[in-house]
Figure 1: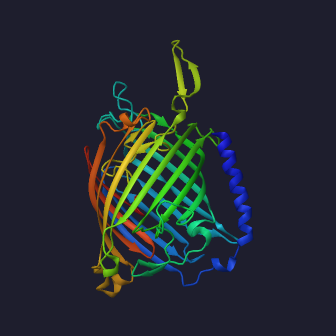
Figure 2: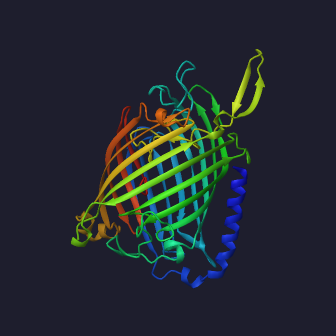
Length: 434
């Protein structure tokens, strides 16, 4: 695996140098006025109680497709979070190189967590057999930072590193960057080599006085084929990503591990585009992940009673395999399940609405909502102590639900309500879950 990582890094350096030959900094300048959107909101979530917050988006301030997103929430229980994201930023003079930072920081208060089993006699924390009432309540701080570099290969729609999307009331009408061919990345879509640095640092204390300080820092190396008509709100096409993750214990990390993951998505239009019918899309997702280092020994310690404590090379509950939350198994709280391996299936039916109530008044029209979308979804999945298909397809967890989403100048805001076997959860976030 280490030789493969070195090879990938070498390829990135070569392609980065090659991008100098096709640089065109004038093409990166904004061609139209930047747009600004702002949205206050309130919602209820079983994990944090009532929450109030706001979201702002600023598109085109650096380049026409560059999107800056920022927001935050404050809950009645004392939890608060802020985040900042930057998407579709291309380096001047290096148009094939894209940069994306994702920054989250905040404080959690009285939050349920399955990071530690409530009793030593309970099944392992976060396992597929863990009990719904075997959770702890935590307070503390959370810092989560990711920095992604993507190199666009000069194949398919990536031969031209610049996009030229054209919209009519938020619907893409030309400038597709994929979905011309569904099996050949040489002919269709944009293919990226990705390198992402991730860092997360928690300082937590449980309701029974136990202090936890999980920290992870590492790199993710990936290959991604984005073969959709429009990445942020696709109506047809497919997507594939394969990535390797490695945390080797640097910068204070206490969770050495190695892992791999695969993410496949399909977007099937089920409407007549030529008739002017509102877009209706069946979106499908398959996701799987494994942690090969799970049973590798990190250290051995002899305790005072003469017994031996063994520490394994495993990720923190938030860094590796996990299910539950605003992306996967939305009927469960964040990080409800985690283990060595995981498999997950999801289906969504997304229906755009021609009716837009925000168009009736001047003051609501200024908010800039292009269209509303209603969604029905169902998903199943499970975690397991081994990556084995027969094991991963037994006793699957499930959730079903629906939601409403709205599109604001390239930004998808969503509110999903998911019902699982243990609870009903409201998940509010930006972007589609897949």
